[in-house]
View 1: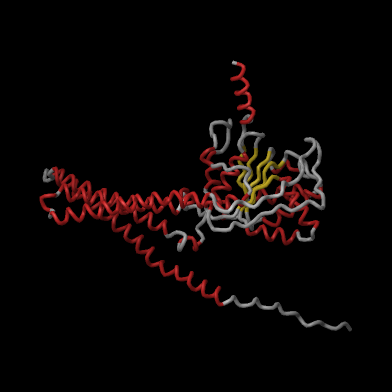
View 2: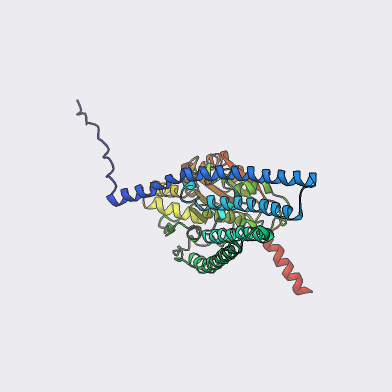
Length: 419
């Protein structure tokens, strides 16, 4: 009778060092701000009530003929003051987003305003300062309009305080330039390996050598969007706002707008951009990736051939499972140019492993010249149908139809030289 081995117990992880515990405890104090944020929401409601109360009084006096010119001007200034203070409260709430609200996990939520992913701390400081200057201007104007009931002492100090606000806003605006430049010119992105060698012909099947060197994907040194953008490996920096929406003959603008809100990243779904070469698929994919970086997500961008080289190198080193697990740290992977060159059965199986591993766990954004149901034309072996099924199950598929933008520009330049 064989000896029965006692079950092995998994060792418990070591306790965190005291410094880490202290850091977690200090960072947890951000939750003390929760009552403050609920209070700001309540104050917003108070200012909404005050706005309509002042508006009702103004309309009542105007209808009954009891409104003088001075009263109307003061009442309008009060309404403007209420609206500006309400806007200031919104900016204060957004200013504390990173310290409190972001921990609730609202990144990519369907109710997240689109502009929230573009919040720049330096710009926000200047906006807050200018908003305070605007409110101070309204208060100072109210005192001068009602100068008969305002003392010289109040006018003097109101003017001094207003000038102090203007000086502070000017200083913040001046300082935001160097700070922004330092952010944009931070640590340079680590150099990547050049990836797989060019394919000799369009009909040649890509076979990945076992000794292919892995591509380096460094984690960003900081938490800023610029560091994430530099580490993502985009071929160039493109924004969704820069896309020429008038060039394609047809494409689903609403679908692209939905992708730009990053709901699919938060919900661990996929996206596929399908269309002929030169119709802007890479531009859109890069723009979505840049927006995801700005929203706090880590992103990796590479062509299909480069991804195949990376996965093949990991498999050759016996660490494919570890490589796939490491990629879980990136909520969005972008696979560009699927379909331009075919892949053999080994490379197809590696792609299947990638898609299957991320299925309902993290997002893929794929661009190609044909939809997933035609991937058997690109990927050899039996893995293509199963891979396409998993990718398309929770996917937003956007079809783009049109002529090549690059060909159009080349033709236009040739015509200009001919004239």
